[in-house]
Image (cartoon, rainbow, N blue to C red):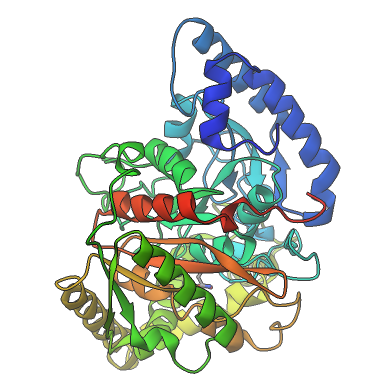
Length: 483
Ligand code: GLN
């Protein structure tokens, strides 16, 4: 049963081949048995899951249907879940039980999805290896000595290991697409504003966006359908109708104009990955797509701009964790300043502290214009590059990451080396565009992802291209040995 996709589960439940309760019990048992190898879950929510599964079975018995009704999923542990620990991968929130459900959590629950648990993640979503979690590193099911990517590494490892069919993630600079690439999944970062951020613990508010991680584009369409939509509680949510994503999967690719940015194939890209990306271009050409080289001239400035803007916003967002209102409080504070200092010093890990310091520096009087304002100007130039490109092409295609999954610990002493892994993903966040990563092959037994970017609100186009590609390739069906 663990090999079933969301689409297959929906059919199996509709045909009464199994109940949601049976499926939920089977997957919970599988998680208990196999997850000690991966560390992909921070919390299991067995009681809630069984209750939701029974309720979904009862709704189906009453004639209700729906692609997510009775489907097991998990949430990245930064989506607030009422009465359930919502840790954000941090000691700071180890004891925090959210008083309400995030909009995404509430919407998926209303659609009948069953929450099996909360997945491991980089602390406060800062990272690309899932090694900064207070709960320990997550392992890549394709090779347990390698990282699964981050920051949604727990969701990715769990889905890749067939512990469950799909999970939520968030993407501030690549944290859905990059772990999807490194674990052979399909992951989609929607347009900024498409999925509500209400109840999603903030890292960098102008970049954060929730989205689905699954094995296929077809399943991403199903999960995104349950997540997307206007939310008056989120002031950056956009009031645009949500199309039927599953209905968009079967469009023909005849005449689709694909742009391949020349800047994506410069130094730093593993040449074996470049070969696989060119193969995926050929596969799409066979389906009728027309390929042309394009240029995104300001891409080289994306990492410096992102690593000013994201820490600046983080330093502001994380000021609320002060030992008074949320989470961890130090023992025996001597006075208020001691309370702040030690609660934050003991509650936040080193990567989070590093980002808070960089962000506070970039925002400080005298440096604001030189760093933050400059970075915002670069952000606009990057957006303009994309707007110009999308006058000529329908989709932009390139690698998701410059390298396959690295060994655990390999980049720990050099944070900038890890930041460089985000080179292809962060531009979509800076511009607010939707992006998808899908399996494109293997290098040394480790998965490689190809990234597709589309104009605002064209998630359906991304899913369409990915689904047609997956009907004609089988990379996404490969299963890691031992799982
Ligand atoms: N790796 C990037 C960072 O550390 C992106 C993380 C994310 O998307 N949450 O900021």
